[in-house]
Image (tube, rainbow, N blue to C red; front, side):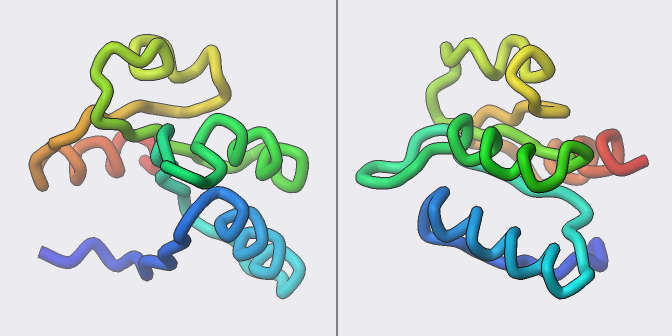
Amino acid sequence: MRLGYEVVPAADGGEAIEIYRRTMTSGNRFAFVILDLTVPGGLGGRETLESIHEMDPNVIAIATTGYSNDPILANPEAYGFHAGLAKPYSRQEFIALIGRVTG
């Protein structure tokens, strides 16, 4: 099943911020962003979202991590995210979450 979204990958938060900036400058926008909270050697999701929020306070952001005890997963809204998704997750969980945050 295809959801109709184009995926734009980024190696870390710094690259994600730059991609987001270029996209906004071109007059386009993303339907949502999925940010991994832990990026070894790079900028993680929480810090990345802070910078993206400065550009676009209406960004729909989803936090994801393999660390199920991360407080952001327990209360994503308190950190500026619309939802959180613990890894590993199923395709069905992913599709349901995307429908919830974009619907």
